[in-house]
Amino acid sequence: MSRPGRYGDWDGGKYQERFDALAASGVDVHGEADFVMALNPHSVLDAGCGTGRVARELAARGVDAVGVDAEPSMIAEAQRCAPELTWIVSDLAALDLGRTFDMVVMAGNVPLFTMPGTNAAVVAGCARHLAPRGVLVSGFSLGRGYELHEYDAHCEATGLTLESRWSTWDRAEFAGDGTYAVSVHRRA
Image 1 (cartoon, rainbow, N blue to C red):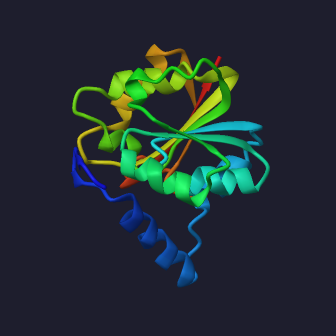
Image 2: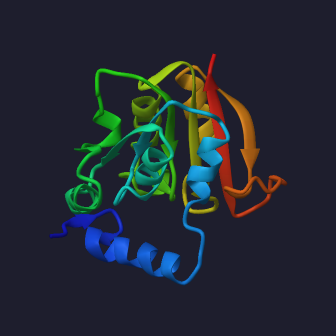
């Protein structure tokens, strides 16, 4: 089942097939999980988890991972792939799980797939799920309508401070003029 989203119809099964094909061809599809693991979290909220690729890999590495996505077909596929994990259908802006995590990760352009005008609320929704000294990690393409200065301002408004920024999930240096950024913001 799919339903219209900001960028068209989503089909969780077809989306997962894309990553399965990449992995079968030898592409490493776990760069985000590698990045996250270097920060040593015990618990992670995979915000905008899609079919749960990152959360599943983190759980396989011993992390308490929970996935949330607004698209029901994505969560249905995540549940099919890993029924033992917790998967939640929710808009990130309205999310309230009643618990906190060492880290919230938004991988795969999540801020670009939210409804227009909701970016500040999405960041706030993620930030309210961070434990003291918790980190928000987000990677998204630049030049597509939501820029780093806006993201940084939204993080700052929720009490998060920029700790580091990279141009890729494998920690290539961020020169400030790239097409992608991975940002780590920490709660003071």
